[in-house]
Length: 269
Image (cartoon, rainbow, N blue to C red; front, side):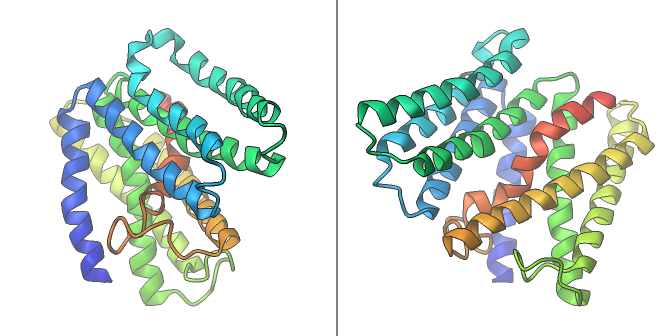
């Protein structure tokens, strides 16, 4: 399992880096849109209602496809459009209930609407951060906070973890969670030292450390949130897409939660 996990990381990380560093805004938008579609697919099928809710699922996929066109919209209107997706989605979902003569239940609507908010809207903030001032640099704070936390929590928790954190995710320990947060902060500070010295930025180390603390905690909440879905649907992983990691949603559960909060917090630096 560990070998598969390492191989997947070695292959996947450079691909992510290439897109985020060298890709233009349209390539980033399309890439995040594809990731959102894949994550939504896994999410819908985790509830074992992929076929039964086909019409509702399509509404979710349409919102995911919309990420590919974010930067066709004038920048001043992007956040307003994102806010508008929420009431529009509710309207269209309930319209489906009406035109199908209550073929779908409120539970079906809730699952679909939550998927749109949880996956699509949260992921929209990745390309938005990427297009801010110094976005090609600050976007990495999102991934460092998420994957730094995951890596340190996994390594330390596996070796020294003795106090279980929650039955939602039995393999996670308090020791691992603390180590994950400390590791993420250290990684973010190291990254800040590098970009300040070589890319001539002027990020405040104390603010970065505080942001790292907050984002790491949020990322771990995101991890537990995904685990709670898996416990409810009685699955181990969302899919077997990424060997050693599970599905796409398993891999980006922390990133999803971190992205919208990072957008606002990174304004501080």
